[in-house]
Length: 551
Image (cartoon, rainbow, N blue to C red; front, side, top):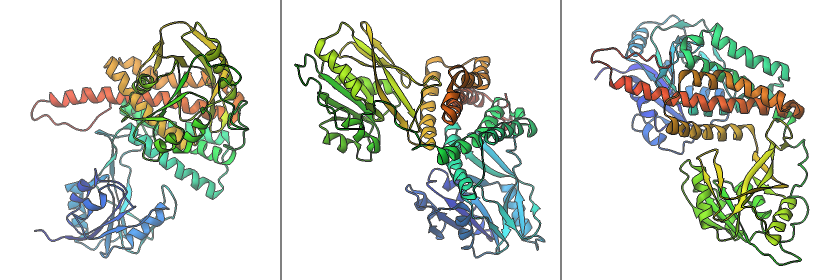
């Protein structure tokens, strides 16, 4: 067995059971492997112990401080900082081995890092060579104690190695956006801690500047559609950080609730008080881990005859809270089809009428009274539209096109949902209109907003691909490169989103981004199918260089 190279490889982990084995396997040639785990809840620690006895559990609160503490555990003179999604190549291993066999004149060396999105090598846009200071002499290197993107400090000039470190950064666009969401939250904390001044003009300039530099100055355009997508995401890093910074300073809690908030004052009397009830009503509520919101929702619908909860296997006590209100709970694993979930609730309802709700909806007293009149007096209609007053981070969005009608109140047996995500209600009969509103409080934070939209756009993209298959290149370009800008103009200017101030700007920007993200994922899915086909039909002996996304 070859003599281990006198090197400590330090790996920082957090729930990396899917990637850690390959990482550590590529580093077995080092004399010492140290894994510092941030309280993983999966099999990360178990896997790490197959490769080394040096496994330490330590909670990470500030990234720079956490990394410095991890490097202090090393016993070898030289340290290599490796992430769980990175791999040594044989060429880099040999280069480091040869270097350490001599007397290295410097105390630190950078390595070129080859970043991947899925199987696609990100060649341009600042993604390659993306040199990182990773190899350093113990006691001569430290990170600044910052929450995210800490700067590296070395007490001498750095040298450079020639061979690549492989970085399988992101499994797909959804994984990229998830990390983007977490990193911008940490970046916001850094801005707030430093007291950094950031107005709208500066925040928007940084967004445009980051896109321009990534796409043009750093030649991201050479990666084709992939390069454009990555440039937009680079700009969105700045926009999201600014948006989170602005809402932290000026956002939730500064706006009064819209008129008709059913949470104020005593609980309204039951429908039918003062007269006989001629029809009954069931409220169907879709939930998954909604313990923080479900009680308020159910408190406002105590007056209905029946409550049915279709729950997607919540783990936070949501079903138990619902049963306190007499709800019938249907446990149903969510398979990505909201229409199916709503139809399941309809099938279990026993009343004459059905009102479909989400856990973040709040039925107002005005809506309760309007529904009560229909139940008492009767109507020729099979369903009713009603106003759904949407609140963005606690702010009632009067403009921008989000204050719209909703169709979720109908006779049992006269309507059925169709569609997985943006499902439509197919009604057998005429449709009336109620002027009363239900209030909708979908997002408590921008982090929650982006997390939810990331999941929804994945489902929407898959639905589009399942229904349509491949899309023409010009159609994808229109939706990815032009449609978001048009949508922003429509929401912010034509529908007067600017009248909602900072909320209107952030709202319009984010929903334009959501459209971009959905179609970027459609591109990712459809191009992956083509790549798989090409891989299967590549002639034997033909090199398969990772140039995904260059078209």
